[in-house]
Image (cartoon, rainbow, N blue to C red; front, side, top):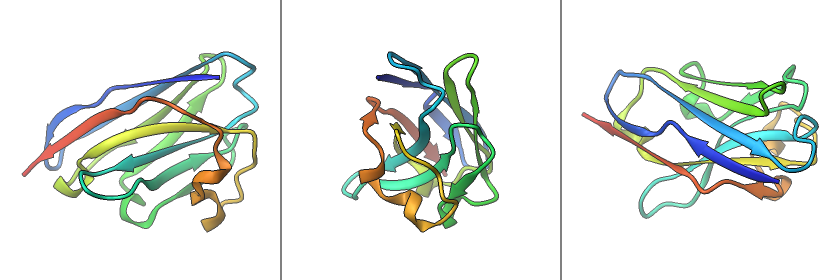
Length: 127
């Protein structure tokens, strides 16, 4: 399974960006998908996850209400719509896929649940 993230860039605080993650390889629609991010000097942290059917999701508290994860299985693509961006959202954003299920709880934040990772796309939010 290969993951290709795109859509990052430079945006002013309060602006919006939509990240995309194209999935190829083995049947992708059965994988749970997630976004993680890593800011300079910090550990990679969970952002959001979505089940393979799209009917269950989970968000980290710092992005809840501002970010929305979605997927289009016909296009083998998962999205992260980011609104009301803040300077602290600046990070490299990674998409991940896992042959697992989304529980809608803190368990979904475990990096070990995801088997495949993309290369990351940089998001920079200026103040």
